[in-house]
Length: 96
Image 1: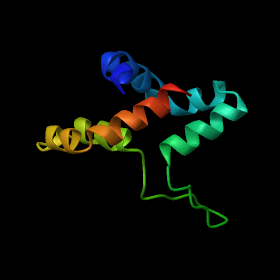
Image 2: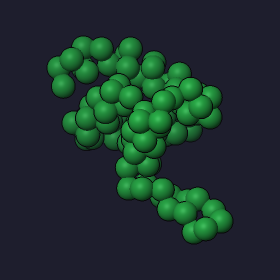
Image 3: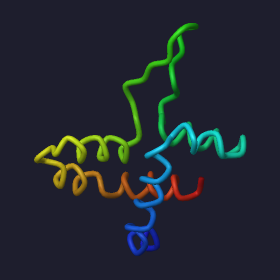
Image 4: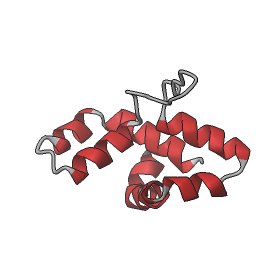
């Protein structure tokens, strides 16, 4: 975790670059990295009913990005209260 905290800005910048163009990021990944990328984005599987995909559970980092883009006032509290989980997700993302 200390390493993630030390390089937090770099890892978040990397995450933003991947998530800014998710389709292009997906296409450039090797198959084993696609599996990790999908597991990271949708930690509780990605439901498919035969015609449509859907999910209510996304990675915490994605939730934070979404909240930041909507200027959610309690964002700092969310980050603080979920710091360990956030660091774990960022660490997992960095391994992709």
